[in-house]
Image (cartoon, rainbow, N blue to C red):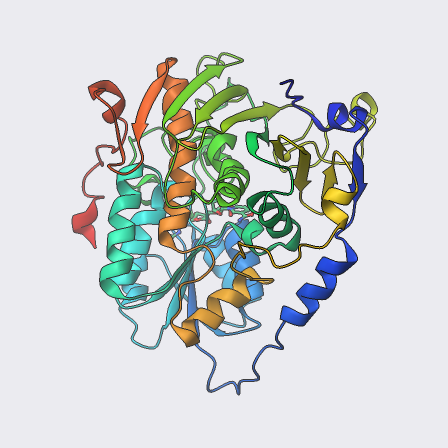
Length: 442
Ligand SMILES: NC(=O)c1ccc[n+]([C@@H]2O[C@H](COP(=O)([O-])OP(=O)(O)OC[C@H]3O[C@@H](n4cnc5c(N)ncnc54)[C@H](O)[C@@H]3O)[C@@H](O)[C@H]2O)c1
């Protein structure tokens, strides 16, 4: 079966593009509950650890439900800016000091990927609930530890893969699960390509940044701005490039639609489409990874350079499109559905428009990702993207990165969470931590 890799070719295949169908919007309105009114004294106290762009963004959302009492960052400028934005929340540099506070009920974790797990484990140990940014982990071993810690501590952990709480993605997954496109045979997840640059200039480290603390468990490097704020995601030391950055969103939806979000693939094969620039970003920039699953589905995860790293369409003149190209395409024996942020398409309009009468499978309903976290703080029920789900979505991305590093087909056992008879590949499941940064530090 031909599997076009971008949206233009989908459109050529006489696609029907649509907004959410009226029957589904009505259903969502009936499901939406008004937020419970709470007096300022009843609102939980929360703290933000990692006050960069995303950390501050999610804390703005959380402030609708909670009082922000503390902020923490190894870059004091970022922490102070966050404190100003958050009405004088107390500033910390070491998250362990912040976590000693008894009056903090929950933390939001907006640190870079290589800090997610240690901070999350420390917060759970201190009895806090956690909203952690995606990708939930740096390695598969970290994810296994985190899942066990959440279970043992009886705490709530929500992963920041917010597409789970977006109606369009839920509709697509519910339709696929209920056979609307027949038997699901193929999935294509299209992710923005990463930057492939090098020749970065050494600059003086900003005085307000503790660079050693920022690097944490990872190998020491001289400071360059492109290794630090925002750009860290394109270095394998700290992250996995767009494969983990965007994959934690779109591959998460692929697993949800298959009902395999507590499992994973059986085989993984990866091909790098461009070589990294010498001395530059190390994470795969353009790639193609193929996964197969026990249910027979073939899942291709491919990069597109028609979108920029933030997901917006790049080069509008060339592509003649104002729409993003990244997203998820589900193909079955009776048609296909493509879904992305704010937009869905199908091979025939009826696939999206006809209501689902008495569906066999109903998915978890959340129409507000942060709201769902606070609802679960009260109910103590698992949130929509609990630790196991966040871990498995990150795992499928980590597996892709490992296959790209090794350049050969790998066999994976999703129950044991290890590669089959492959010592070299299993060597990538955990990483050595640079002392004194380790699980012993918390
Ligand atoms: N859900 C989404 O749509 C979404 C969007 C953007 C980013 N993210 C995720 O959010 C995370 C942060 O991304 P960003 O773009 O805001 O990065 P950023 O570099 O802007 O912010 C990270 C902040 O964490 C701080 N930090 C580093 N180590 C720390 C430590 N040990 N203790 C306290 N603070 C520490 C940094 O100094 C920086 O201020 C990433 O994991 C990213 O994948 C998610």
